[in-house]
Length: 72
Image (cartoon, rainbow, N blue to C red):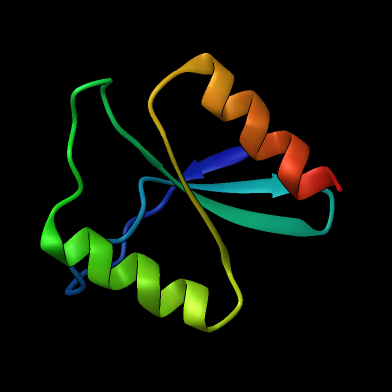
């Protein structure tokens, strides 16, 4: 299950929260040529430093790899 992630007042949060049972990950969805903004890079690092799973995906193969990593 996924939900749109919105955090008023905080720029750069990932697009989606993904729930896989009790596991939770955050996913930023980009086009194949899309680039992360500096605010997104900062937020991703902050979240990862707290132990969160954060993924940036731009195609179906990256989505599959993200799911496999979470399920390990």
